[in-house]
Image 1 (tube, helix red, strand yellow):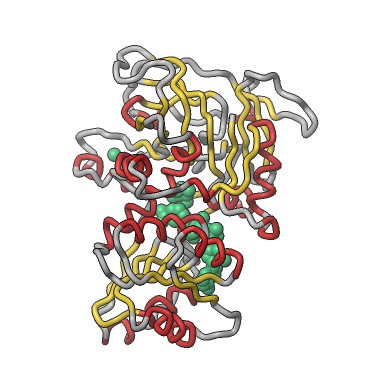
Image 2 (cartoon, rainbow, N blue to C red):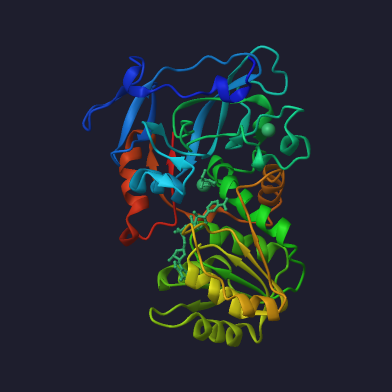
Length: 383
Ligand SMILES: NC(=O)c1ccc[n+]([C@@H]2O[C@H](COP(=O)([O-])OP(=O)(O)OC[C@H]3O[C@@H](n4cnc5c(N)ncnc54)[C@H](O)[C@@H]3O)[C@@H](O)[C@H]2O)c1
Ligand SMILES: OC[C@H](O)C(O)[C@@H](O)CO
Ligand SMILES: [Zn+2]
Ligand SMILES: [Zn+2]
């Protein structure tokens, strides 16, 4: 690896200035083994791009990406052009960071992998330098030099041939499909939350939001022994999905116009009392308030959802009830656990994939993922 580390190896090439990257026309058919990828840009366009098939350098592995899920953040980068103040789309950028695939070729010095191995691709690769305190202590999601695929400026894993450092791949046993391997990425987010919030057997738990992150949090909380579990959403069909996924979960529809205190009363009735934990998976201010008002004395609202830059909190409710509020930023050290939980049958991710597309249809897949009327939970692209 050259001085400057992984970020230099993966520094993105400006597609428009690089003749080896080519934006495909809407009706253009790429050849079967072309390295196509789905790119978004600052003009809120999404299109297929053909780029060279890379060669693995020392320590790298070339992966044939077999399954990639579309995350809300991919859609957000496409539609809004940014997430917060630090992640801004200023150029063409490759999408996708929920991927699994098969090893095709390994670079010099790679002994852990061989062609044909099946792997989940960890989406964020930190610098791993001894001089980086966060990497050294294992909190590598805070590494300032992390390469997080599909977050600008780094191109994503929604492509046919992807280069990855050997250390940041996770072996999939034969019993775990590529589809499930790709879902290990959002599962890693939820597992990091469960890990850090300290939830234990029998803890009454609220999950706010029944999108993919809320649903993987629901599966994780259930596997961890939370009981009862209440899940909320503003869309009834998402609650119906949650109920099918985890029978026994109690659902509360958050009605437009109801105040957080009113919603919290309904949640407490559904749970049979105030709850110990809330895993907040919307990032919406009113939902965070609802979570706070649903807590028992000493409870904890653990926020995974991201939202508005500045939000008000009901300060005295938190203070007079010793309610903790914590946050999760991506994850660290969760992939091996995610794969084990899926392989061991404790978490069944299969029902989450509601729509499947081929790589050539990636643009269509994005339109389905972004359209709430289509009712998608997880859209995946397979190759
Ligand atoms: N912290 C992290 O590292 C991290 C990682 C991945 C995703 N996220 C964030 O997690 C959140 C959830 O992701 P997702 O992919 O499930 O998104 P999503 O938009 O599919 O799901 C959010 C759900 O919340 C529901 N909702 C909206 N307002 C609500 C309210 N007031 N009360 C109850 N439910 C409400 C929506 O109807 C939707 O079903 C997003 O904010 C996403 O950006 C954070
Ligand atoms: O799954 C991981 C998340 O989508 C990322 O943190 C993204 O939101 C920004 O990089
Ligand atoms: Zn994501
Ligand atoms: Zn680092």
